[in-house]
Image (tube, rainbow, N blue to C red):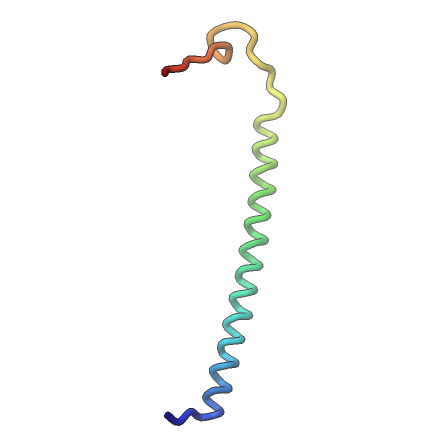
Amino acid sequence: MDVSPALLVDRVLQTRNNQTTQDVQINVLKKALDMQESASAALLNAVAGNLPLAGSGSVGTQVNTMA
């Protein structure tokens, strides 16, 4: 098997370039997920807030369990 040194160098450079591209894509994905996480947390906190608990009536004051 005869391998050209120029071909070998080209393959190594392509592999490094592909790895760099993948590293950049992963970092962009992580940043996007972090942004989604903070936006989701802010939305849930805004919706939930401090809601008062029910003190009377059938909604929120009784627990229906089946064994």
